[in-house]
Length: 385
Image (cartoon, rainbow, N blue to C red; front, top):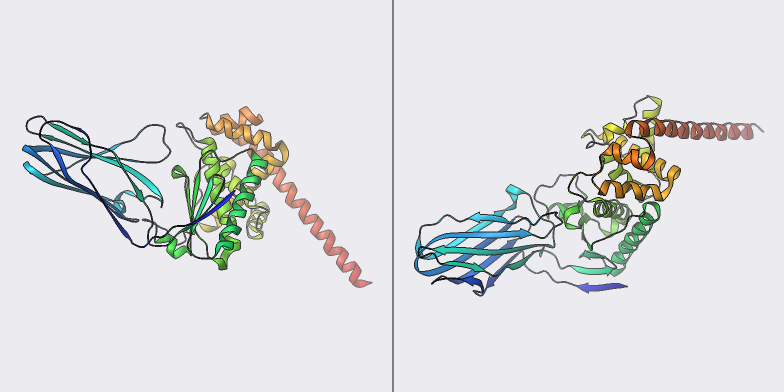
């Protein structure tokens, strides 16, 4: 069932002033005022005013971000101040120094304080939403996916959601992978406005997957819908695969992660095919072991890396089937090494895969070239008659 709603966002800075609610207080300590200011995407500013019958000697802010983790992680900030019976404490989380959070993130925080008599105070935890309130968001929900957008009509959002549903169905059919947690997708009107929602954007950024937050942010306008559908499919695949394989020991080889995302987009684009053809003709294919690391920053090497990754996944799925791919993902979820997972599931390590795949891809493109030559000859012969 698809659900639609409208969400208004009218201000950039959201200030929340809380009444003094205590979880625990000892002695004369009491909260006079507490608040938090949200400035998306760069700042969260916390403040507390606390009083006591004697000097206050210690104040600390504690906060935790809601994200996928294998352990509860709480950050603690020690506030510096001069001891007094009334203290105003402030601290700003400047994300321009530490890295940002995606829209829709949630942060829980609380304060503790002590005074000279040994009294202790702890405020009740408060949850604050870190939202991008610069735009009037509308939402559309289907299953585990909620899509947020502000530019374009409802049919635009429905078309994107249809691509999401198709992408999830294809991925399940080809690999057995599926969403295990709800996902949020934020559609910005263009890449410029998307980059305005990020702390450290690259000038070429068009979409980003925040895998630990199950959140996507992509710049898609009605005028670039075709590109947007492929971009959503690519980034959504990363989220699903991340959920399927998350473990505290290790991740996926880059070629598998990117290859699955490329493969789920559909047939390989002709531009990527041309890089594969050239690499085969010049004996310049990158090894599987090298593709397990982050891809090159050089454009041509990067394009070839993506093209090879697609081809590697195509080779594994077409020759060994969906069941083996699902088994591979589950093996990685157990924390297996790259070589160990491949050997357990397929009976060969990365070097063995490299040898088998090279034979496959070279033969594939040689056969394609021969067929093209035959068609060209036939055209010439027909032309003569």
